[in-house]
Amino acid sequence: MPSRKFADGEVVMGRWPGSVLYYEVQVTSYDDVAHLYTVKYKDGTELALKESDIRSQSSFKHRKSQSSSSSPSRRSSSRSRSRSRSPGRPAKGRRRSASQSREPKEDKKKPSQETSIALPKPSENNTKRYNGEPESTEKNATSCIILEQKLKPDLEIKRVLEQYSLRSRKDDKKKEEIYSEKKTFVAVKPIEKVSTKTKEMEFGGRIGTFMLMLVLPATVFYLLLMCKQDDPSLLNLPPLPALESLWDWRVFGVILLWFFLQAAFYLLPIGKVVEGLPLASGRRLQYRINGFYAFILTAAAIGALLYFEFELHDLYDELVQFAVAAAAFALALSVYLYVRSLRAPEEELAPGGNSGYFIYDFFTGHELNPRIGSFDLKYFCELRPGLIGWVVINLAMLLAEMKIHNLSVPSLSMILVNSFQLLYVVDALWNEEAVLTTMDITHDGFGFMLAFGDLVWVPFVYSLQAFYLVGHPTTISWPVAAAITVLNCIGYYIFRSANSQKNNFRRNPADPKLANLKFIPTATGKGLLVTGWWGFVRHPNYLGDIIMALAWSLPCGFNHILPYFYVIYFICLLVHREARDEHHCKQKYGLAWERYCQRVPYRIFPYIY
Ligand code: NDP
Image 1 (cartoon, rainbow, N blue to C red):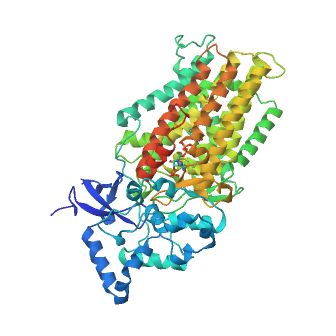
Image 2 (cartoon, rainbow, N blue to C red):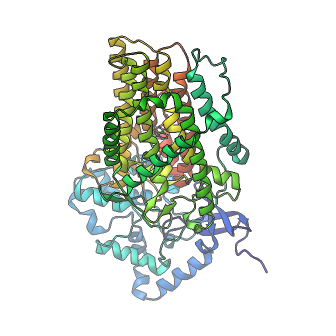
Image 3 (cartoon, helix red, strand yellow):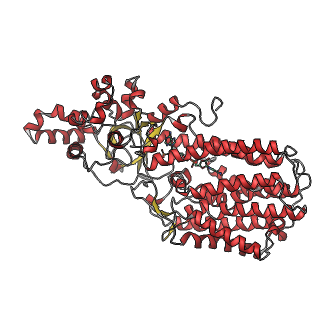
């Protein structure tokens, strides 16, 4: 008996993930183990679909004839109905709306052109045709302009968004009629999960991720040992410390205490609770936003310790032991995460960390949102223990500098490094909600990569400049300090406004603050901003982040390359991350993404890359 219903090369109708719309697709392969078909949409997008998300073309034709034959009157008006069935096509009444009457006359003359171009049409209109938005844009060279909708407040913005959104439209009777016709043709089912099986492995696959698991911890220790040397030149390799000197149970206890203290702050019932972006299942998780309060409480606790003359500066001498203890903790956490992920339901696995290969899934993270009750482990680790820990380490380095060099005030370089990085951390915590739309939360699973990154790499590598300055004092003049400060402010401004623009747009596209922005609609119902920061380069937030990274290194002078490790590594990280994101977006948005890339050709650096 054949285990599959559709053959390779067969042209069938495939459901678009997260929607009730079906498009013409071609079956390219079948995975016997996962029972998934790889199908290719006409815009080149390839997806893995379950058999239940695929239908033969004939079943569509059959249903169509049934529906139209059920009522003669229906049949007689089928043409006009089929035109109005497209959610993108405004109903006649709507065309006369006040908002539309403001549109230029030329636009009014061809509303049908606009709508036929703009929207993915449900397959009942024409089962033979690929009826997604991308094809129609291919047909019309001017479509890009037509597709870009200027966001306008109030009613008009709602109209525009509804027009391009695939969400159900409960509040509009006319639109409901349109929708119900669709129901007669394609049964509207609750959104089912899309298969999360990982087809393409990143980071060099199994070998690459295995190597990274060795290289990342080694790099942290190399950098910390180098920084302690009088001459931290790259070729002046540090002597390896005795193994027993690296481990201290007391230090490990402090790391545990720190982690659980931050966890206790996270659990405090203060701060609002918000919903994350919809998961593949359509469900939204709830997150408590109280990172900034956790920071204030931590600052109060550290202040109290200093008041009672706790010697925080000792951290300078024990930083390597702390890094070892944090790495051990991150490893243990990763093991726990992987073990528990084996019992997680398929739809809760990360799309990028479900390859079936232990090493790869362990590294990239198997489960997307591991939670203990309402305690979200990934979300917690993203911004709390590591990020706040980084600020505490910086403060300890500032105190160590004063103590070791007998200073009554810290050096200007140390003040700049501490202030810039403090601003970055406070900003992240103040805008904690924005993390919910980042790749780490929406796409990447929680495994070794994020656990080690959040708990070890961030606090111990990002504090390298402050650590360096303790052993290698650097004097900078006030004008130089002022110039570096301006650079940091420019970077921060770009970073913050770009992130806020995208975050606000994703959370509430109808936000009046975004009224002057344009976007390209996509078949998923989400838009892609093409003006504002996201029309300047494709990742303006990365540009701002990199400018800031440079400003953090400059106060360390030019004697050694070590304090510039951060900016060099960060450029590599963000260029790679940008490529990953491009790949995901291309898969998600198909031709709409290509149009965006044509419209905004530079990825991170204007006129360069
Ligand atoms: P982004 O916040 O840049 O999110 C990328 C997503 O934004 C895409 O997947 C897409 O998701 C959406 N998007 C892309 N283009 C558009 C557009 N034109 N209009 C609307 N939405 C668009 O990704 P990251 O998570 O990588 O970065 C978040 C922040 O964190 C950045 O500022 C980055 O610099 C910083 N960062 C810092 C690190 C550090 O170590 N200090 C490390 C990594 C990141 P969708 O369409 O699905 O919404």
